[in-house]
Length: 374
Image 1 (cartoon, helix red, strand yellow):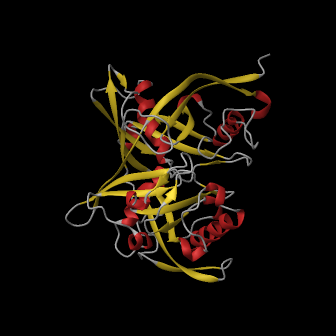
Image 2: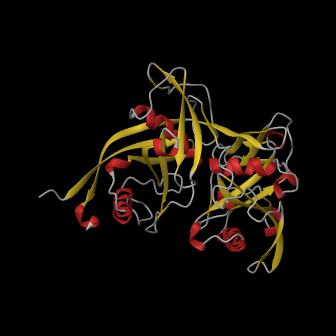
Image 3: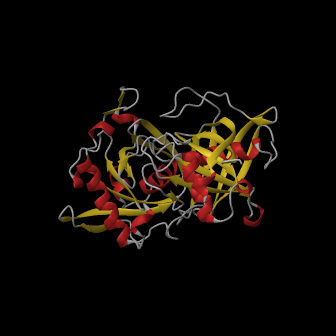
């Protein structure tokens, strides 16, 4: 008797994230059975994920499910799942912009989208946000190009540049770019014993912004300086913000982000200084549960943050330097994340794009014990 269930999958790196990709047809149709399979395959719950493919890190405990997109006016559908590490959950509440960079590459390599040189445009319907993403993938000799000279902070070396446009994702979580209708609000946070000024913005992913000093931090801290006390302050702001805009506590949104006017800090990975004149502002982003500092910056979060920086009156706009070239440069723990923002003559968002790199790391068969699925 065969005691393990074989599952076809591909491991992809997309930007600063890594995840396991599945074709929709290779997973159970029943959502509960599908999630049991994913948890078992990733090795969750376990802090090391030693019995599965997960990397024991928020950035590498991710999955993507790809299917046909015709019914949505797209080339493919893409469902992102954030897999708990020491907790047994698969969250579909938001998208991952870094892993999104690998979706077009996967679709072309799997024959779901014809390869067209020199660039293949892939229309992606993200089921998490129910909106369209546009990926432009360089192609050489009938396959996604791997080699290139584009570098991103948080990934060693260079690779081929993939451009992703999220301009059609306003209101991805709440249905409105400004969930409260205001560019800034006063938010009472019981754990802090006071109200702080915040901005709620929802493009690609609902996010909540506040000044670093308002929660008692410098704003340039690296991962080793983020104590549990600091993390709990961020999460207290998030919880109060979620209640304000009507999101469930388990939604993990809005993501809390502290901001600070341009300042010098040290790159966590390279230990090299990031000069103040290289960034539009400094930001620190906490994800959870449990709350932990994002060591880089989620691409969807970067899109939202860049849009917030161009909205007069927001907390982010107040501290941001304008380089005058349409590019917002977000200073995060491991470098700088540039996002291009463009608006038409009436102020409508026409571009919210960033560049990433991606590639296939392996393809094959994973095995899940039948007993886990019973």
